[in-house]
Image (cartoon, rainbow, N blue to C red; front, side, top):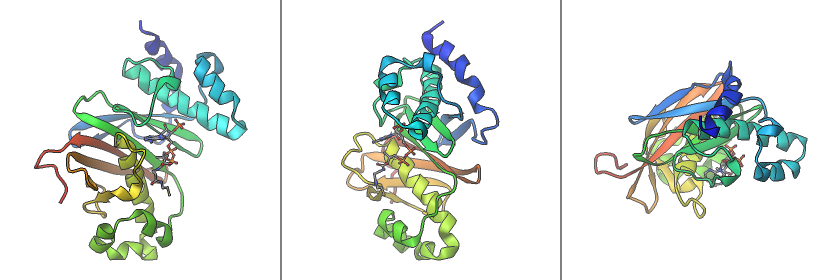
Amino acid sequence: MPKGAIMNVAFAQATVDSGIPSRMSVDDIAIELFAAGQPAPVHALSAGECTVADRLGKRARFEYLCGRAAQKSALAALGLDTDTSLVRMPHRSLSLTHAGDIAVAAYTGADRVLGIGVDFEPHANVNADRARFFLTPRELQTWPDVLHPDHAPDLLRLWTVKEALYKATADNDALTVRDFTVNEPWAWNGVAALTGRPDVALRYVTTVARGGYLTVAAAFAAQPAMAAV
Ligand SMILES: CC(C)(COP(=O)(O)OP(=O)(O)OC[C@H]1O[C@@H](n2cnc3c(N)ncnc32)[C@H](O)[C@@H]1OP(=O)(O)O)[C@@H](O)C(=O)NCCC(=O)NCCS
């Protein structure tokens, strides 16, 4: 049995009653989700993970170790080494988000994707000023009413979309969320474009989870039928 399979058993209980779906589909790609509400146990940590954890304060250490628990389960399911200190984000098959008392890892075995992203926001408040920062002129032109206070939940939803799109994109160091334009900002699943990169097609799907929004996104090599307007 590979080392990863043992780790998967060790972390399997963490998903119980998380309120997070275990799978979401983007286009025809299945993205598996694993939520961890308990820290990875110290004995399961690599030397690299211990080094990071030992530098953190209590709260940050808890969040980091929940993230390791979720990510280790995802790596194990992918048949990869479960030492998360070897993982570099963005990753083609894996993504991670922290929110409140849980961490959620997303992963896929699909080889058609260039990258995947996940973002979960349980209850943040996004106002119009902040939204003007992350929405593009085209998005605001397409849906000017989105800045009305009645649409505050949509702003939070769109924030998770932008973050998931960003995380799904390779070589994103020089990018910001404002480089991504959602074709139909009111849609709970749809297409997005990356400025200056017509070769990359992006799709996302959002769901309600634990009273907030959970979005997964995937990047593909663009084909004419998938490209955003
Ligand atoms: C990196 C970033 C995506 C993290 O998002 P966040 O909502 O703060 O935090 P989340 O808990 O959802 O995600 C954190 C995880 O994202 C992953 N991550 C970090 N950098 C990443 C990157 N460049 N690409 C993909 N995933 C990344 C990591 O796994 C991290 O968890 P870890 O540090 O425990 O391993 C975000 O800080 C960012 O840089 N956004 C885009 C840049 C931008 O436009 N910023 C404007 C902010 S107003």
